[in-house]
Length: 209
Ligand code: GAR
Image (cartoon, rainbow, N blue to C red):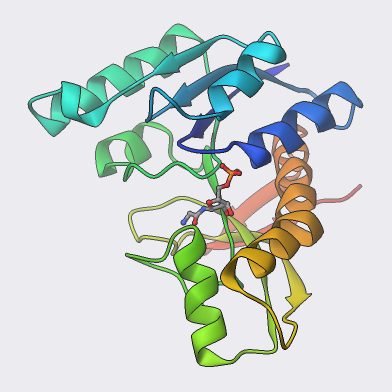
């Protein structure tokens, strides 16, 4: 069994999708062993508690130097013998040191079809505001490995979602979550835990057999 840590900052609906998926037995060879929140009042912490999953709050501002924060995060991941780190709406930037320590073992869910509406400053509702502003007719979600380039790591799964004429950022966010994120993230996690994701030349191939 691989130990999974889910890093959160907000509502935690993607965490909930992972918890529900694990309960249904769909996360093959993996278990959520730890939830780490960057905010003490994140509702995601309630979800972890309700599911009986240990959780910790790690505040960047509690550490004077970024190296100290990195060490605290890495030590916590080691303490729980974490094999896979899942960023599920985690709003603190993951440093190069942490990425190097967990090379190809950190995945992120992003609420657009990368490379559209991604990179620095594109998170949460802002992504959907930008999509509506541009007038795209199709958007979606992406699950990808995390490397040193913001939202630039190898893409694992993507799913398209239609944009309605009367969408607000909120209605679009909800549709992208329901139709794409909550399906893609548990699937990508399960594929990882089964050793079915191979990365060659920054591209992911899925070994489905
Ligand atoms: C999700 O839509 C996720 O894709 C997004 O934040 C939301 C978190 O919601 N992540 C990013 O924008 C990362 N750049 P949740 O807390 O309900 O899972």
